[in-house]
Image 1 (cartoon, rainbow, N blue to C red):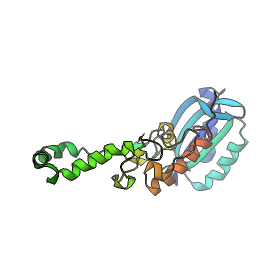
Image 2 (image 1 turned 60 degrees about the vertical axis):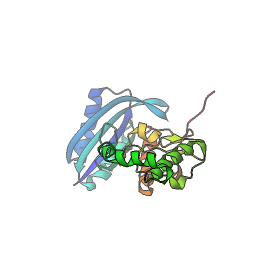
Image 3 (image 1 turned 90 degrees about the vertical axis):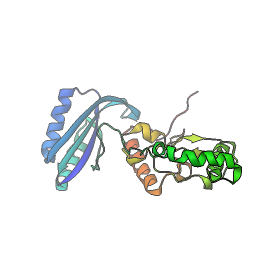
Image 4 (image 1 turned 45 degrees about the vertical axis):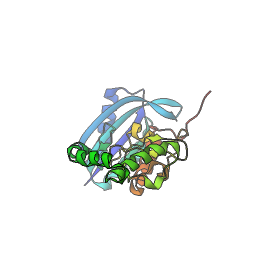
Length: 237
């Protein structure tokens, strides 16, 4: 028995009762234990599927035997009202479509009283004080927007939504809340890692880890397949 997450993209003309009956017939073949059934309802598609611009989304989390999946998928492919479906291993993603963010520890507030005395002494001593290095780092951070600071001086960044500042080619990523688990249904977070043309931003720009970049690629591809994100963005005048 393994935990799975199934996303149904159904015909938007179906009513809630018809959707429930269809799911019951599917799950009777699938077997196992249904833990969560989340009806997103009718949503706008990122691109048309079968000439339809809307679809009915349902997310189901189930624990079942992998041997039941081939027959289950065969029924889904034969069903004409099932526009698309996706079956992935459940890694703990919320069905609501939100990513799991870590709480950032508040350390600076506790350390400020202890750092006040050295900082005051450094201001009196001038450039030769112990706090000169910190002042220089702050000046370099401000100079980065003007293109005078090198990217090598930037502190290590953790995985999080990128926020850029500065001119093109010298953009720096500001620290964001670390993402513990990136949800492929979290369109808002995924869109921040995409360019205006819909391409995934490179790691050298977002300053994320290689592991997070691989997770990002997988999440974006799944979101594109489910029509939550477009493959390309058309620019209309």
